[in-house]
Length: 151
Length: 432
Ligand SMILES: [Zn+2]
Image (cartoon, rainbow over all chains, first blue to last red; front, side):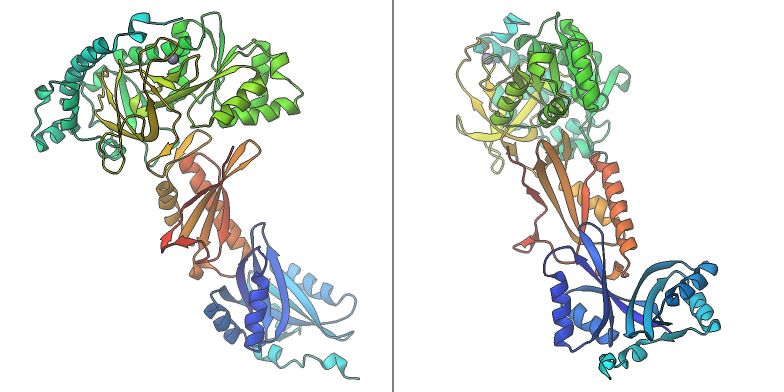
C-alpha cells in the first residue's frame, strides 16, 4: 500500500516551520512524523500527516510550495534487528532508499519505517512477498495516537 | 615629463581647430559604414555639413543597442581586409559588442596608452606587471602595447593566481602594476597571509587602477598598503579601451585625451548638455579612428567635467571619477554584467519561477554575487536532490554567460521583494 508524504519547500530562515505547523494545527491535521532535509540556504520539510490531501490544500492555500509524494510506510517489529531485516531485503533487491525515517507505534512492539525509494512498484511487490505490512493514508490516520498510554 | 608635449599642452584654440578638422573627416569616414549611411539618410543629414564643433548636435546619439543591432560589421568604414584586430566588451557573451581596429587605429590607441602611463612617471627602465586578462578584453593588450611603446620590461602576468603574482613581483622587481582595484585589495590579504610586506619586500612604485570604478578611499587603501602611487584609468572598449582618460601626478581628475575624443556631457533624461560643473552622462566621439568611427556614443557613465587648467600644464580637460551608471550595468571583478542577461539565462531554465534578485556583497576585499532565484511552484516534487540539481544547473549556466561564479540560492515562489509591483533586481551592498 502506498502512503503519501507532504514535502514543503522552505528556505532556511526563522519561522518557516512555525508557519507549516500553525496551518496544520488550525486545520486540525495530525502530524505522524516530521523530518527536515536541508541544503545550506533551503530545505525540504517532510511530513506524514493523517489527512495528506487536506493538508496539501491548506498549506498550498497558505502560500507554501507543497508536493505530495508517494512513500511506503512499513511496519517493523520494534526490537533489535527489526530494521535490519527490512534494509537487507531491499538492498538485496537493488532498491535504493532515497530518504527514510521512522517512528514507534507501540514501544517494544511495532514501529513504522517510512521510505522513499526509486522503484516504488517493485518495492511494494518485494515487501508483500516477504510478508511485511505496509500502511496507506487511511491506515496511518486510524492509528490511535495515544495508544501507548493504555496500561 | 611629457610623452608628447605639443599635443598634451596644446593651446585650446588650436585644439578646437584640430578637433573640427578631425570631426569633419570622422563624420565623412563614418558615413561609409552601413549604420551611419542609413542613419544619415533617414534624417537627411549631409556629412559635409559640419561647419563648427556645435554642428555635432545634428547627429543623433549612438548607443550600445545600435552596436548590437549592426553587429558585427555594420559600423565598419573600411574593408575587412584593412582590419588587424578585434576586441569585445568584457564579460558578456550574449550581449557582447565588438570593435575592430586598423593598424593605424592600434597605433593611435597604443600612443594614448603610452602617453597616459608616461604621464604618471613610468619610464623604459620600469618593470611593468600587467595583471589584467589578455584576450578579447581590452585591458590586457591595451596596456601591454602602451608599455612596450615606452620600452618598459613587461611581465604579461594576466589575471589571477595571486601567489604567482607576488612571486613575479619579487623575482623580477616589478615597479609598476596594472590591476583591478578590488583585486588589489584582495591581493593585499594574500600578501599578509604570506607574510610579505610590499613596502619592504617589493620595488613597487606605481599602480594603474582600472576596469572598475572605485572610490578615493580605495585608492588611498591601495597606496598605503603597497607603498606606491595609484592612478585612475578610464576607458571603454567602444572607445578602444584603456587610455581614454587618465590621472596625472596631481591626481585631481583624469585628463581625457581630447585630440582623439570629442567630449560632451549630457543630462541622461533630456539629452541636453548639462550646465558647467554639473554631473552628466559622458558622450564621446572618436576623432581619429578609421576602421570603426563612432559618433556621439552614450557611454552611460556619469561624471563631471573639471574646468580650468591643471597644475601639470596639460590643457586637456579632466573628468571626475565615474560616479555611477545611467543604466543598470553592474561591474563585479572587472566584469560587466547586465541584470537582463541574468534574467534571459534564468528564464530559459526549467523550474525557475517568476522572479530573481542579484545581491552584491563585499566580504573583506572580495566581491560576491548572490543570485536568489524563485522556484516554480509546479516544478517542486518534494525532492531535495532535485532542488540541488536545479541550483547546480543555474550556477553553471550563469557562469558560462557572465564568467563569474555566483552563489545561487533557491527561494520560495513569490517571496522576493517587489517595489510598486516592479521586481527589484539588484541590491548592491558593496561599500568601502
Ligand atoms: Zn594634470
